[in-house]
Length: 182
Image 1 (tube, rainbow, N blue to C red):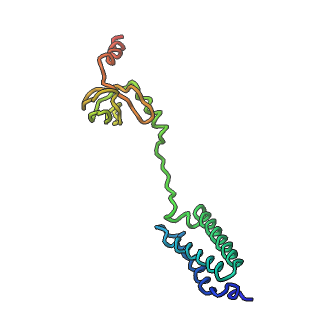
Image 2: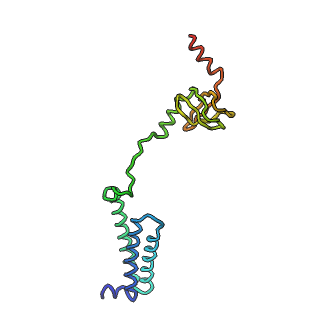
Image 3: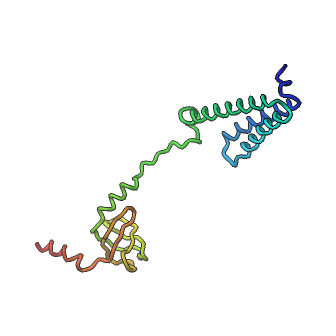
């Protein structure tokens, strides 16, 4: 008994749908998009199984399912391996750039150094805005009421990315004046 006879009366449509399904799944793996190729390939493979269960041999349907899954698994393993170390790892599909920027925890600890320092409001604080502290523009939050542009401020609290400020008063300047007199 030959292979074609084993497939039954749906031998030709089964082979066509099987080849088309595997081809469409392969196309889907290499092209970004909506997934039309993948869906049509999957539907084609389901049609192969339905044809074999309905008009062919259930045993052949199980063989086709097993062989198709094996081919898909081997293809996925090959693609993943190629993306990691092979030719695909050097293609435009893989992002190899690295960012050497400062991480958030580093910024949070640097902000702790601002506590007690004074600066000037650059934009109105309603309650947030921009102030200049130690010659650097910093996003800040007003600890209370609205602060106009040009007001002198003092950093009260720095927690994570939030810097809390209040308007500078004469009491803030008094310790500096006493230190200069001594």
